[in-house]
Length: 126
Image (cartoon, rainbow, N blue to C red):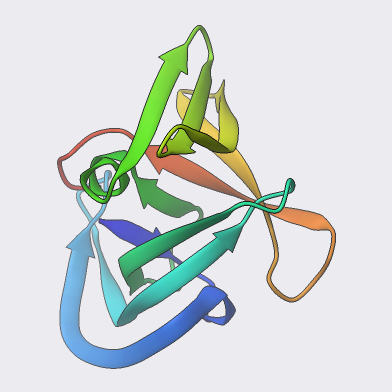
């Protein structure tokens, strides 16, 4: 499952109520909506995410590695780096930092690189 705190990153959005997600510390967080996102990377590539959960209280935006592989993307891990490709074409790369793979994105509202997201490579809950 993909999770995003910033509603402005969604390209389509539908409000929902009564849904929560389980967090890593055994707490729950409220999901305010779901939708699609087009993440823009520094080299101009775009990663289109479907069924993203809007959870304003999360500290980091999370891309599910399991979900993007299911949608046709490829993940290649080497040393402390992950490379994201689609149909053999480079999309972006990320680096291991404090036990998480972090990928830089461009904020949709600005031209500078301002955000990072975490790539979750597990298929289980947050």
